[in-house]
Image 1 (cartoon, helix red, strand yellow):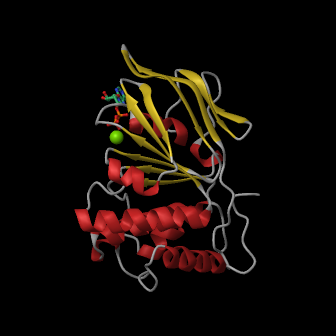
Image 2 (tube, helix red, strand yellow; image 1 turned 45 degrees about the vertical axis):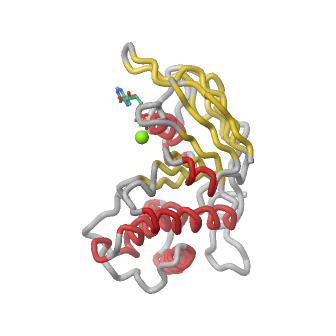
Image 3 (cartoon, helix red, strand yellow; image 1 turned 180 degrees about the vertical axis):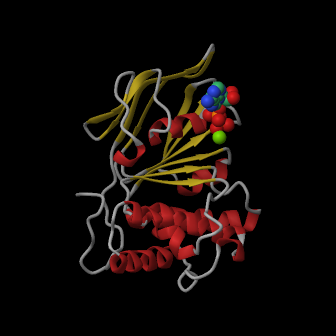
Length: 239
Ligand SMILES: Nc1ncnc2c1ncn2[C@@H]1O[C@H](COP(=O)(O)OP(=O)(O)O)[C@@H](O)[C@H]1O
Ligand SMILES: [Mg+2]
């Protein structure tokens, strides 16, 4: 199944088709600092793994390696049977069929909500009419129908993060990466959005890696929780 496969009855609703991710003996050093020290993790296709650990333990570094924003100093990352990163291979982010959601939303303030969400499709050369349809579908999936014409700054923090989520799923990626996406929101909003993200991931069947330092969040949406400490996997909890 390709990343752009579309369902018959759901219009442009992203289809199921997550990738199986495996990390083997993954190492990352920055100068003398050994940040990741032999990480082995399997993320089965269509499931969500939460990476849990205190600030500075290497969670964002691990996500950057998965995204292709950083090349590992040792070990390898496979997507299904393909090595996408090792000491001698590093596929660019655009070859990995990814969507990413960051803590600070990373929306473009000068563009409308719809234009923000459409951006990944524009980059792929998707035609205007199809783009509009897929943007509408993505906004509907995150509960923002009708808000496409607004500017991001005219929305609440929770709504802005929903826009970022819509932008991450609009191209039907095979892997979604989340870096502490709810940390800027207050408690109530966090709980609601966390449950909504969990439901959306289950519905889409996309593989996801979700970084957080909040155990409750991890327990709400993850099939597997991996606890990192001192650059290693300290504990694995399968649920
Ligand atoms: N590009 C870099 N150069 C040097 N050190 C880095 C770099 N990126 C991250 N680090 C260091 O790696 C460690 C882990 O960082 P990070 O992965 O951001 O942790 P977390 O996301 O768990 O808070 C920190 O000590 C950080 O300072
Ligand atoms: Mg981080």
